[in-house]
Length: 248
Ligand code: PGA
Image (cartoon, rainbow, N blue to C red; front, side):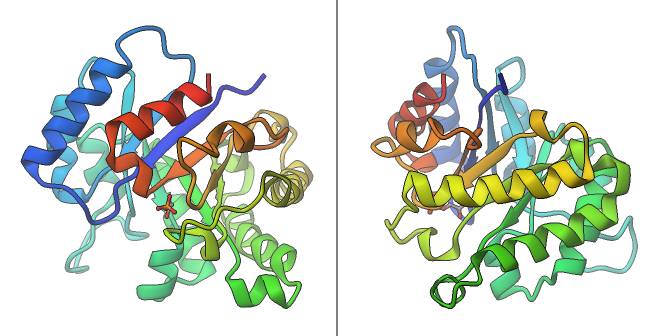
């Protein structure tokens, strides 16, 4: 049985005061026995705050991005070593908003995953098709291409990845992939991972895209869906806690 993992992606939201309140509510809500893994991917400016406020809790700190470079003249970037300094356990790589607005290619995403692994940070590799790609029947081809670039780059460390399937058309739109649609893609990804690693059966595959308190249980009941990458609903403690409860 794979342990479920629920990751909140705050994106560019929050403030010192709002974060303190949200993190405190999450801590309190998870004070009992929590069988699922939980993490929050906070904006980089709040990594220190999250590290301090989540110390001793079951909630891990995650970053939303990492540089592929180790150090040097890369203004505005954050290295994996810097994330490590702040106790970061996971980092998203290749979120569709990074691919779309920051021109991140499959090759760059793969290098980012490698940079994170080199510092002991688990990359959460995001893959997913656009609506046009789905309608053109290219879903499998697109997600396999995106994942293949990472698999090729990280070599024998494949089993240390977390993979998140996030159909672009479902992100922030309120349109969730049906459990069957999501499971079908997860099965494709699991098979691709199995061809690269004997440990694919233990790897954690997340679904993301308008996951909420109402639809989480059905999605999480699918054979190859091991958790969620949750955007909007992770900003409200009650909603995020309900999703975590559905994962236990
Ligand atoms: P959403 O975002 O839950 O708001 O759709 C998910 C994500 O982008 O990770």
